[in-house]
Amino acid sequence: MSIEIANESGVDVDEAPIVDVARYALEQMGVSPLAELSILLVELEPMSELHERWLEEPGPTDVMSFPMDELDTAKRPDAPPSGPSLLGDIVLCPAFARDQAVSAGHSLDDELHLLTVHGVLHLLGYDHAEPDEEKEMFGLQGELLLGWRTEVAERARAERERLTRERQRAADAKLLGTVGLDEPPGDEAQRSSTVETGEPDPS
Image (cartoon, rainbow, N blue to C red):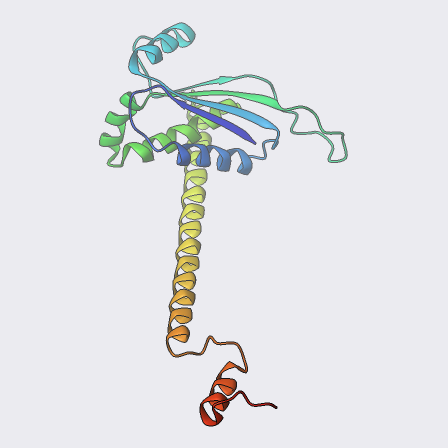
């Protein structure tokens, strides 16, 4: 799955988790691994222009989605592979999202992760114009975010355990080297024989 991200917003954000949460959401939703997605972070003015042009609403907004090709999710498993499908574009506005993050009591990064999942669901045809649609979409959005955060925490735990094992191995190797237990077999016996006779043991 190809996901490209470009930050033209002037706001310093961590791009890697945005790509990661988008990939997780697409995978969980069963989107073809051949799909291509573009994520663009923009300033307030270009977001306002997009908002007014495509939705005929004034001012900027937090996220907009622009679907492209429809993915053939019902293709037979034994069908020949097709070329990549452009799922569409997600446009985020960090400057607008910052105030929402403050109101929600979480970080800007958290808000951008939420908006990215929101944008992915819009690309897949979900909407929240009606109460039942809103309930379904926001429920799914929450499940995807929780699943992703759980996976990220598990990855971090596994990485900490790996680093701990590596540090322990390094400490053990240093300790064994200090007490001379890392010498090849036979070296200690040969040195003892040399000390006792002054010459290497002929046997």
